[in-house]
Image (cartoon, rainbow, N blue to C red; front, side, top):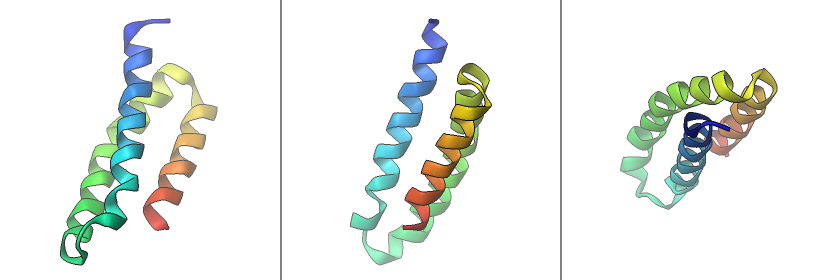
Length: 70
């Protein structure tokens, strides 16, 4: 397993942690945080899919969508 593959999982885990903190922000900051997480999540999702395959990528997409819309 390469360092880049592990780095993609670490980036995805950091994204999940940051996305789960959005509900604790003040209402006026949530909109900006929501769109920031989308902009940051697209490359992380692509990186994760590149190293771990499309099944993991679709699962990560579903998890990220669920986190952002809850």
